[in-house]
Image 1 (cartoon, rainbow, N blue to C red):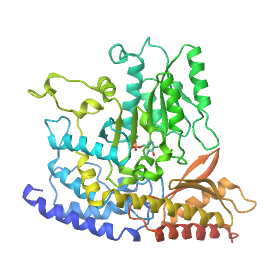
Image 2 (image 1 turned 135 degrees about the vertical axis):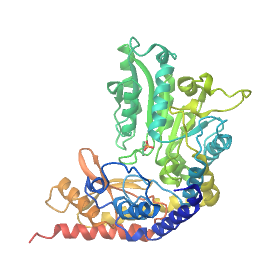
Image 3 (image 1 turned 180 degrees about the vertical axis):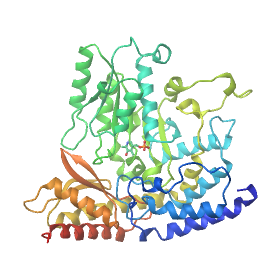
Image 4 (image 1 turned 90 degrees about the vertical axis):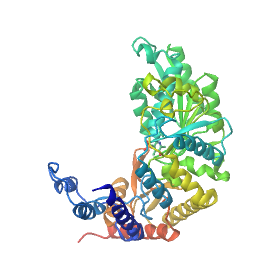
Length: 472
Ligand SMILES: *Cc1c(COP(=O)(O)O)cnc(C)c1O
C-alpha cells in the first residue's frame, strides 16, 4: 500500500469499525474457535511479493472478528472490563498516524507534557492530595515490577543495581493472598524471590489482617531477614476484596517499609467521592497503580502509576547514556527514566480525549449505574432456586454458585459456566473462594445497559433450569 492510498483504507477501516460497534450486541460474546483453528488458516510462510489491500482486508473480515472475544460487547461480564470509549479509539488512530515514540521529552514534547498534565488531572479526579506525581505505563504489572525494584533498591541502599544480589541479606515483602499474581511475578523478576513474598492472613472480609502483618514483620526481623515492602490491594481480582489502607500503611511505615497499592480495577471508581471510603488512608501510599484502561474507558493500554517520591523510582530505574542526553535543556522530564522500557507510546492523548468528551460526571454516572445494576443482579440471582451468592458486591463484582438440592456444588457451578459461555449471550469467568469453584459477575462494560444486565441474568437462570432437567 502506498502512502497516497492511506486515506482510502483508513476510511474503509473506520467504516468497518463503526459497523462492528453498531452490531456488537448480535455477536456471541466469547470467540467460538478451537485452539489452532486460526493458525491453520494462515499461510505457513510470508509472501515474497506484496498483495492487494482488497485481499488483505477481505481476509481480515473473514478470519479475525469471529475469532475474537468481544471485550466491547455490552454483555461482557467476565474478568474485569477493558473499556474503550469510542473517543479514545479516535485518539489512538491519531497516535498511530504520528507513530510517535515518546521516550524523551525531546522526542515528543506534547506527549511528555500532556502525560504530566493528564496524570495530575487524574490525581485530582481521584481525590488524591497534591504531591503525587506519576506516569502512564502499559500495565499494572509493569508498574508493580517498577515498585518492587524500587522496594528492593531502597532496602539495599541502592547497592543491588551495582553489586548484584549475591551476598545481600534476605529481603521480605508482605501481601495478602487476595493480591493479583502480578505481585508474585514482580517479586520473581526483581530477584526478591517467591519464597520471600509473605502471604499474610486475611480477616473475614478478605482484608489483610494488620495484627498478622505486624507479627510477620517482627518474626522476620527476629530471624535476621530484611523487611522491605508491603503490597496492598484495593479491589482484588478474585472477589474485589480491599485491604484497610489507613491501618496497614501505618504499620508498614512504622518499620520503614515502602508501600505499593494495587487498585488496578477499583481505582477508576474513586472518581466518585462517595466511594472513597474504600481506600481511606491512600494518601500515605508510596506508590499506587490503577488502570484507566479497565473501568474508566481509556482504550487498552493505559495504566497510571502515582508516586509520592518519584526520585526513589528514578534513582532505581533511570540511566542517562550520552546518546540520550538532551543538550541545552536541564529542567525536563524524560519518563523513560521512571520505568523499564526506553521506547514509550503516546498514551496521554486518549485520556485527554476521554476526559474532555465525557467529563467526570458522565463517567461517574456510568460507574454508579454499574454498581447499582450489579447489586440488582445479585439480589435477583439470590432469589432464584439453587443459586447462592458466595461473596457480596464489592463495587460491581460479586460471586455465586449454582447448587440445586443434593448436587455437587463445584460440578454444577462449573457446568453452568460452560453452558453460559457456550450459549454466547453473555460471558462470565470463574475463581476459587475457600477452595470452592465460584462464578464471578462484574458489571462495568462502557456501553452496558440495565437491560443487558437483566438479559444476562435471564440467560443464566434459563440455562440453569435446562441443566436441572433430567437427561433423556
Ligand atoms: C487487572 C489487574 C492487574 C493486572 O493488570 P495489567 O495491567 O494487565 O498488568 C493487577 N492487579 C489487579 C487488582 C487487577 O485487577
